[in-house]
Image 1 (tube, rainbow, N blue to C red):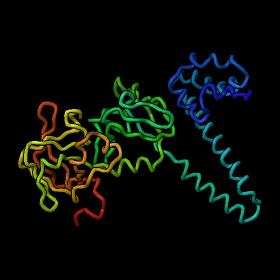
Image 2: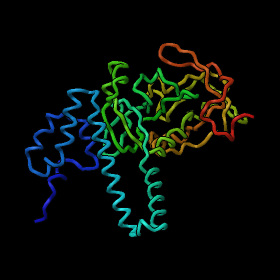
Image 3: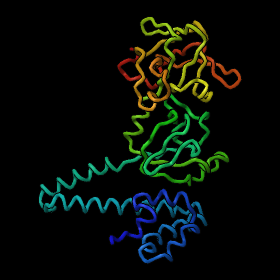
Image 4: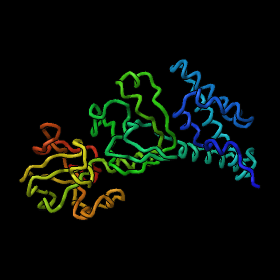
Length: 314
């Protein structure tokens, strides 16, 4: 009969940091008495977790996470040595090692962001958005953060997006924890920069139900009262912050031609997605609040930060 490593029955080694973020030291303590292999594996992380619970400012968890990262880096370098098989004393071997380290620096670089936990389904190596929500640079309330401009600190994600993450953890920064009572429901997530850039690339994208509009050049005019939507979902399924009301006859200048909806998570919304178009406004919408909805009254003179250089004025 094939034997199974006891470690594998508990939690994958590469995902152990996320396990610590879900449990306290008392919950993990029985593992120390299970067998020698589990004791060796969990003794240090449980010790760090206990220290962190006793004094949240001690930095024990962060120090252990850094040790893990350095250990992983050491393993990667050992593998690189085996693959290279070259004498490090020779110029050729040293140059290859330097290039390998430069490549590792790029590949191992991550960005840390905050998400509101209840808005996400947590799965190994990824998060799936349950509703329209935000990726934030801080745990502050989303309405306190800028979506555009030099102070941009949040990125919108619609319902149904699968976001790859490298690591998930609790909020431990004391300044963040003092912001408001809901900070404890936030999570820290670490992602590859390329993932963040892909999310940033769709900033400023809106969706419109095309039969409600008339188009001339790069201007569309609402032929009836309608909505500017952050997603192709039915307007009744969207939250107020995902909608801007457009009164009949209101013109909107676009940065380019309306595009067919092609994002994977949008194309499967419902049977009328093909009647929607994705648009990017040439300048930010000017709105006024009525009840809980924003009503568009025109567009500002400034250029939104999401426009690529090719379509900016001047």
